[in-house]
Amino acid sequence: MSSYSPATELLKLKEMFNSKFGSIPKFYVRAPGRVNIIGEHIDYCGYSVLPMAIEQDVLIAVEPVKTYTLQLANTNPLYPDFSTSANNIQIDKTKPLWHNYFLCGLKGIQEHFGLSNLTGMNCLVDGNIPPSSGLSSSSALVCCAGLVTLTVLGRNLSKVELAEICAKSERYIGTEGGGMDQSISFLAEEGTAKLIEFSPLRATDVKLPSGAVFVIANSCVEMNKAATSQFNIRVMECRLAAKLLAKYKNLQWDNVLRLDEVQAKLGISLEEMLLVTEDALHPEPYNPEEICRCLGISLEELRTQILSPNTQDVLIFKLYQRAKHVYSEAARVLQFKKTCEEAPENMVQLLGELMNQSHMSCRDMYECSCPELDQLVDICRKLGAQGSRLTGAGWGGCAVSIVPADKLPGFLANVHKAYYQRSDGSLAPEKQSLFATKPGSGALVFLEA
Image (cartoon, rainbow, N blue to C red):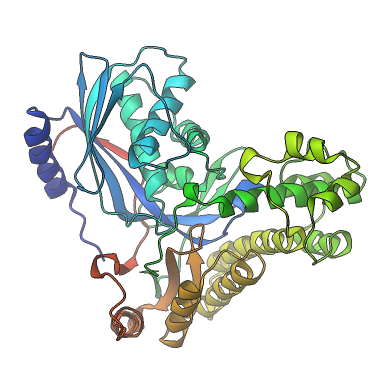
């Protein structure tokens, strides 16, 4: 387990803050990363997901100042200092630079309260969540910044309100996520995973099996969600699939945005939605012209009224595959929760099978894996994991595995040897994250070190 001691971390950060700004922080805020155990790429389709917070987090030391200047520094020399006027927050969507994620959280709170004038502050950011690894380092920074801003303003919001504001504000950077990452960052509780449901946002405890541990392994392939169009293309493919399914079922399709809306309007089960998908959509990719024919609209209407700016030049859309993944993955999440509640004898094996099915669907239907992740998942299964799957957006990042507790030491040693100590020495050692994790607590404010 990673040893996280808030006291020593805070003291270290306090000293660094003092040497950077020549003063002492007034308070500290932490927000954790997360691992999504099951339920990939379905939050933005309206479906429930099953994440847990990890112990790794983003930690920010803060001092409000009388000027209107926001000064940001990072303990990691790879991330350069940044300063700007607190009253003129500009977020450049074309560059997912680290400070823009902080600005997203700040701007979200500022706009929620309709404030034009914000006080200045000095902030030193620290963090031990591996970046671009699918463990939500960027969302943890957005959430942390939102809580920092709220605290500086002396205002109050519920955790649910904070999560909703931060989920919305991360879109300033161009990521059309669904809200899972921000929700678990605020709503997490130590010792339990959470089923997170949307509209309205709520979280239910899911007790994980005591005889198993969840192990995170980094494939060492970095994937920056905001910098890739793949993520936003998937969001659009799901939206288009929802519209075509609604049209096929003679529903009012033009205001349908998510796949869950089609199911809700039809009042049928996820299993029945999979059958409708088989009837309504074909496995061959759709081009823009065919989508227009199906919906009875012009190319111009498709481009201006439905497609987002970053998907207007896409020539093929795999609607059947994406819808099949979403409906089947949503069913796996519910089955996972049910299995945890019923706790049968072979519970770990059953949960592992659901995780394996999830990876297969992500790989083949959603096409969000990569060769290295597939290899890592394969190694984990061969070496004792009951189930293993990619976690986070995919296209790189981490795999999560369910491992019987008594097999853990051997599992960690063998995976390290099989994946990380390859003869070609191609993996940079600092990226070699392989660790067991247990559900951690959510975002917090500390008043002193």
